[in-house]
Image (cartoon, rainbow, N blue to C red; front, side, top):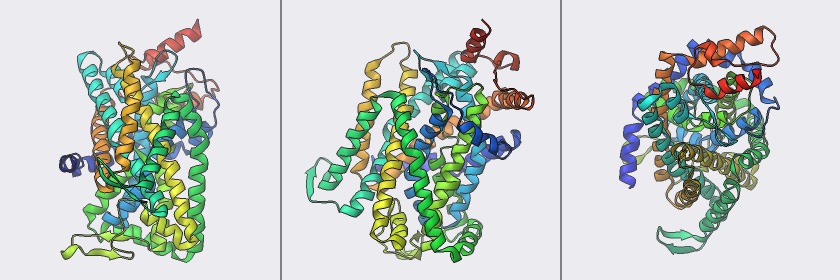
Length: 501
């Protein structure tokens, strides 16, 4: 299994996908006239619009649910891995993919809103829905089914294990593995089993409550979690203020003459950037579609901001803590497994939260380990919740004719088993599984939304329509897809018709 996953990872994350992510972001940025810059103020104001309804959640709730998916192990262990394998220059490429990816997030999330449906009193949408509705007929339905299956596999099986593994590694890094217990997966520490059990039980209590409960939990945890983590980073930066120019210089210089090679810096920066902020991956549109908004472009703009929060704020916080304190190694291809840079113990796991824990501990002592472990727990736990919701939406898409409650029950159990499996396996193997999941959905989604853009540009039409209404001083926005030449946006057609009646 491990050999197969590694092979798939090498194929899926070829240079073609890395440059496709960058090119798509640049393309959408140019076509939308860099909406991620022009509408920055609008992003902030839309966050606090109280537009929740019985069928949908508010824009802010949709943002924090999306952030709960974006802000996870990628922000702590992923950044450490990017530096450890790609050098400090990888951080620059994470910034690039975030800036450009904000426009991709706008496009895919607006598509999620345009083509969403009301499924028995609950808004649902995402790539499977918008591909079927846009392309229509046999091709659209076939592609929608393929995409839905890929999301069920990715978010239900491959990705949850990465988050669970990080939680276990962070906590047992403090408590120790505990007494070894013989299991079917080999000898596993008792503390590892206890942490795994706690995560699985808490997850079950929440995901059986549906999107409303997930949104309420995320709304409470995510803002405090992210702000607390960034505050810790700010304190460490202030304590090492004199090192800021050197760290920034190191990031920019290494981005093009990387110690680990230019290809490694770009590859690891983009891979971990996409893994962390999920722009183009197709996960964000599921949460965006669940929001109650007056105009589809509004939630697209809000979701673009979530990419900034994830990478430019939280990932940057991790990167600066690690680089300022010098708590990292850079793995190279030198003879005898030597490091290109070795500042800490060679046995330190790169694909994990260890660098971050060591960075915080170097300033705050033993409290640092505990703080990062708590941050990892909440970051990862809320991400697993978001993954479950995505899997649920795609199961609902695949079984909508049968309305199968059994299928929804089974995906809950499968995801909980995937969490347990990921928690007790080696970090490198589980990260590779996660990369396969991310790459699989990114390929299908980015290619699909590019085709949609070339054929009809519905998201660009929606943006221009929203900007025109805003310029006219409208306070209650409307969206008329027929007038704009957008076909099969049945939810908005019905909403407009009911409003007129």
